[in-house]
Each structure stands twice: as C-alpha cells, then as structure tokens.
Amino acid sequence: MGNNVTMNAKDAVFGSLAECFVTIDGRRYNFMNLTEFESKWEVTITDVPILGKVGLGHKATGGKGTWSGTAHYNTSVFRKMANTYQKTGVMPYFDIQVSNEDPTSAAGRQTIIHRGCLCDTFTLAKFQAGEELLDEELSGTFESWDMPETFKDLDGFAAN
Image (tube, rainbow, N blue to C red; front, side, top):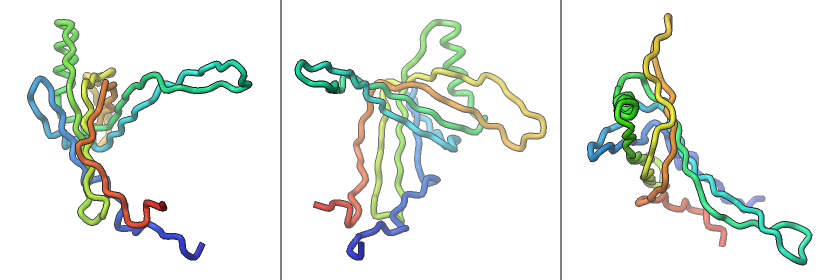
C-alpha cells in the first residue's frame, strides 16, 4: 500500500465551470440557465444461447442515449418547440454540447456533443407560492454522440 499513487485533490473537476450549448434549427443558444445535466448511453445487451455451454453468452446489439437536467424556469425555447409540435406535428431534433474544464485540474477539457436530441416532457407553466426560485426538469433522448475533446490521463492513472 505504501507505493500506491493517489489523485491530487486539485484534479477533481469543478462542475460549475461547465458550458452547455443547444443548437435548434441552426440557432445556437448558450444554455447557461441549466443548473444540472447528465447524459447516459445505455448499451443493449442480448443473451446468446451457446450449444455446449451451461451459461449464456452476451452480445452488445445496440444502444440508447438519454439526457436529463434541471434549469432555472426563465426561458421559453423548449416550450416554443412543444407548441410547434402540438400545432404542426413537427418536432425538431437538436444538439446539446457540454464541455467540462476546470483550469486548476490537470485533466484538461472534455466535450460531448449529443446529436439528434428530442425532449420527452415539457413544463408548460408553473408557480409555487413562497418559492424563491422556480426551476424545471428537462429530459429526453439522443441518437448519437461525438467526443471532440477528451480529458487527459492524470499522472499515475495508467498502471501498465
């Protein structure tokens, strides 16, 4: 245990320094009103029966992207999208770009661009008596993603 390399505390990435941009119909928005965001890529695993084996094998056979977030209730961008959809049947796909970078961390910068995003729920109107700040939950799906920037390996990460 005496030779175990540990991470420097300064290399943890401070979440408040993230950036988020949403591009809808060619228009790019700085989605600075988000206070929380998370995306996941869930791999579909199919059981594979194999003759001569007691246990099943497994094979990756697809994937599904989902995203969710919390935002201050102070923009109508997604409500306008919902309104267009309910009146015309046209739901625009959009991109969400999230970058994490903390200048004090040796990890550097990572950017994920979520492609083919859709919202699955829209908050249309809301109030709460006595509440100081209003927020709203956002969620949806995406079809693919790109990673043009990746975090650097921290010193000691690669154990060889």
